[in-house]
Image 1 (cartoon, rainbow, N blue to C red):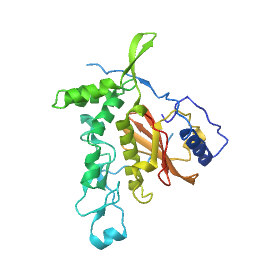
Image 2 (image 1 turned 30 degrees about the horizontal axis):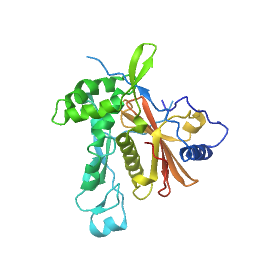
Image 3 (image 1 turned 90 degrees about the vertical axis):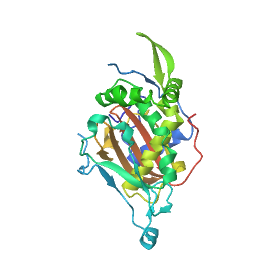
Image 4 (image 1 turned 180 degrees about the vertical axis):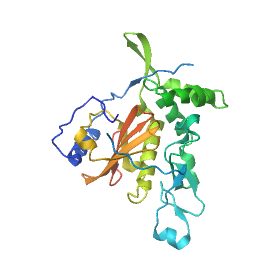
Length: 282
């Protein structure tokens, strides 16, 4: 699940050194080899224990909160007395068959501005992941219900055109097909970074992480099994989302993350100790 056979890195070096090597690749070049053939669907890891409450909110304690009774936005750090609840993993990724599930869906406190800032990004994120690669059961259900239905709504034409613009024709032995590049869609990557930021808050990994401190891309590197063993893995329904992370504190990197959505599209992310100018994926 957490591998992509495009670049192999020596397995006799530690996790910190491996991520440092990846970071050097990040700041020097991009291969762009992250295309995925579309397939429009037709009519031993150790995981954490799961809570039985559907929405579980994690709120950090701190001096500001203790003095004022306000909660801190998980994304910008602003103190708000009546924060909204943001779902770290977008709700739109869960098909209707999961409505009765008791698996925990993570929420964090967020100011209204932050919560609303990616409301237009998450549908595009879902649509891109649904059409990327061979369909899984959850992806097929999402296509047949939520995605196709969204195209009939008031903004449906815009949603459809946004998706079609991301499709590039390619020739295959079976004829012409289309390929999408999730790593080159700014809205997709913005949601990936947002998920990492929300998970950092949920796991109590320090103050709110700004968008500029997260670098993310489609996973294009073979991850040696030795490194996977050093990461802490969790899921919020393995058919929808699973992730692993490790703390580094080396070469300006705080943590590294692997995130897999709908069982097939994995992203790699680094949380940096401070904001840096990194190459633009576009």
